Length: 215
Image (cartoon, rainbow, N blue to C red; front, side, top):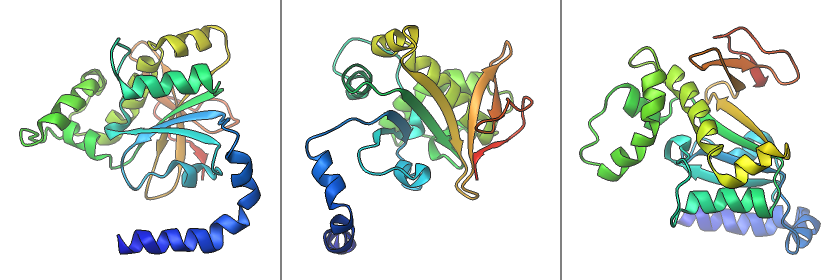
C-alpha cells in the first residue's frame, strides 16, 4: 500500500496538473468510443497498450478475457456491455487476448484446478475454444481461438446484436504479445474458424501468419 500511496501523491503532484483541463471536461462528460474487453492479468494494461487518455476506453477485464453468452439475470459483465453499447454508444468493441495467459495455459496444459473451483467453473466458458484447438498444449493457438469464441459470445448480447445489425458497432479480436509489444488482429476464416492475423490497414495475411497490428 505504501507504493500505491506514493503513486497517488505523484499523480496529484505531477500528472493531474498537466491534465487538469482534460479531467475538468471528463467530470461532466463520459463518451468513450471503444469498449475494450481484456484479461485481468496485471501485465496487460489497455490504456498503456493503446496510448489512450482517460475517458477514451470503457474497460471490462475478466480472467481469460472471457465473455459469457447472454442470459437473463444479474450479470455485471452483461450489464457493462449493454451500458457501453446501448447507453454510451461505443463504435468499436475489442476483445484482447494475450501471450502467456494463465487461464489459457491452465486449460491447454490440463492443470488440476480442484483447489480453485470458482476458477475451474469460470474457465468452462472456454470449452468450445479448447475443442477447436487442434493440438493439446498449444497455448498461442488456444489464445487465438478463445478470442474468436468471445467475439461470437458477444454477438449473443441483444444490444450488440442490434448494433451489429444497424452497423453502428464493429467487433475486433486482438492478441497482445507481452514480450515484444506486438498486437495482432484476428479474423475467423474457413469452415473451422481458423484465426488469421492481419496488419492494420493492410489486406489479411495468409492463414496462420502473424502480422502485427502495431509494433
